Length: 292
Ligand code: ADP
Ligand code: MG
Image 1 (cartoon, rainbow, N blue to C red):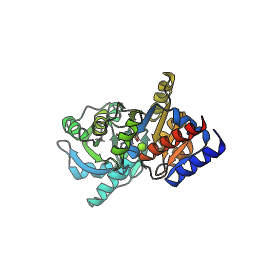
Image 2 (image 1 turned 135 degrees about the vertical axis):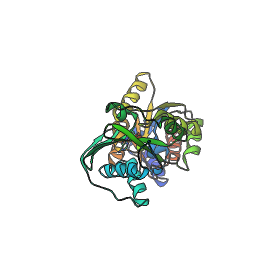
Image 3 (image 1 turned 45 degrees about the vertical axis):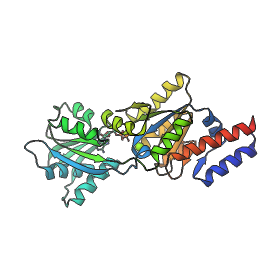
Image 4 (image 1 turned 180 degrees about the horizontal axis):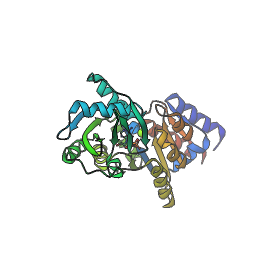
């Protein structure tokens, strides 16, 4: 590639909010055939809102939310913010948690009012050796709507569930359609539950889902695809996505996301909208065609 044509391409990209790190990123992106996208914050707005609190028999809705939100005050996860904000909106007075512990990809645990409390996904319920919730059917119905359900555990039993919704970004459906037309195979990778992932993916025509993945799994999935001869780009926004962005042939970070994600990426979409990937691909094609 001539330095001049690369400079023109990166300059034109920058004008429309697509920051291309160097010539190598542009050259590699032209060869990419598979696009992995993170769900939360990449396909979706990334600002989940609390939409339901369901207590198990013998528990109070307000108490379930109070325990959940008290614990989540110690977490910086977007799900935690949604739960704390939901409790505050309902005027619930929170306590102080002690022994707070974040369990990556699973949830949080700690002590509230001297009692053992935990909050997280089914993996966390299983890790703690607890019985499945009697609310499983209700949880599944919510997941089928694309919501993320978390279980609230108190003293060795599930006390209820909280559910949050995170809408798909307005620009996502069009962008995915255009990316399909450009020939990408699109795979969603998410730490979220398979049912929730399927509901979101179905609306967007995503080719394949990898759900319930731990952060380190995302990089491993990319390595496997590369081993099969695929050229892989990964789009993500989170601290958790950084290893995968670095492993990909081209990492694509949301400008609205974490700094380490941006540092690990070859392309940054300033506004965090996936239509920037369409523009990046067109620029890559045009530049490489001029050069050959
Ligand atoms: P992703 O960002 O890809 O959705 P994470 O690895 O951050 O995935 O989280 C995976 C799952 O673990 C979440 O969907 C949720 O069920 C659970 N989880 C993680 N952190 C928390 C938290 N602070 N509170 C409750 N649940 C959590
Ligand atoms: Mg994310």
